[in-house]
Amino acid sequence: MSDDQSKTLPKTESLPAPSPWPNANARLLGLGLGLPVTPLVRLAQFDDKEFERLTLEWADGYLRHHIDYVVEIQQRGGAGDKGRDIVVWIHPPGDPERHCIVYQCKHYAVNLGAPAAAGEIAKLLYYAYLGDLPVPRSYWFVTHRGLTNPFQDLLDDPVELRKHVLTKWDDHCADAVSSKFKVALEPPFREYVEAFDFSIFKAKQPQDLLNEHARTRFHLTVFGLPLIDRPPPATPPSTEAPIETKYIQQLYAVIGEALNKTVSAPGDFVQDSQLRTLFDRSRITFYFAEGLKELARDQMADPAFFTTLLDEFGDGLYHHYTTSGLTGLQRLLETVKASQALQLGSHVLAPHVLANDREGMCHQLANDDRLAWCKP
Image (cartoon, rainbow, N blue to C red; front, top):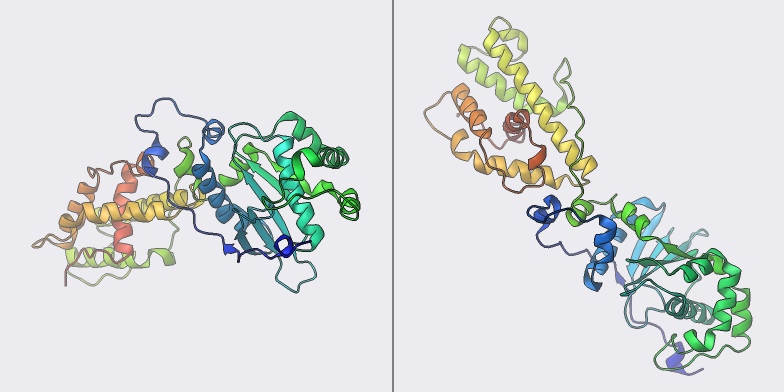
């Protein structure tokens, strides 16, 4: 064996962050795009760059967070990858349970068949035989169009898969390991292949890939799923919760200014039905907006959607909550009324925003110290 055959690979790179998809809001809402395209059909139409971006999102958003004991995810695709695009390491170095999972991501114009896959399997077999890489616990083919039926049949029967690789070695494997040399299936390498556990080779079906990608914060941006059914908002607790402290203190200041006295609890204005209704309604609408925040966090998997929506309200209402010459109550009421007419454009949460959410966003701004109803 020559030095060129056994030399080590270039240094691996940590998994890079996926780049943003262009026109994210348009993708998400499907504005003017006609009938929606199902995610499975859309995935099958991805070009190689889109598929690479999607697999990075999947690796970063799903594999990193939903496989136990992950310590590192590496991107190994490119020249000299030895049949590995993504390597997930489980447990730290030195741990007796340390192992890796390999994902080979293939983008072809047609379904992945046995000839192309056999070449990738040959790379792993050869370099594992040399000791250049560890045998992974499992090795997954990841595609955007799925597999041919004959290749899927081989994966379902590891014994037949081994026979196929051995039989077709000269046709599909010998020249696939490297562009610099041909690998002959001679002893003791042949004995190694014959004893190898071919059950490690599996396929990530496109629908499974989509299901796992759906558990990442990227999914809605890419595939524009139908609008989500929103759960009913929480009922405000009977006593003030820690998350309400700041905006409630501002409400006390507004009510105290209107009554010309110090207010520090609801009992201080229980006799004024109008102000008591304002206080109760403000808490109700605050929790409506909290429900919108939970929708973004839990069902859209990205709390940044709510943050950017709050920015829209903060910017759009600025001249109302900063107007001088008004009492705190007047400033609050003018801002709340203006919030009902604020244009939200194509923001991803816009279809979910209710009238109570709009009012509640005003109190969310107060709770974040982004406005003050009563000027010093």
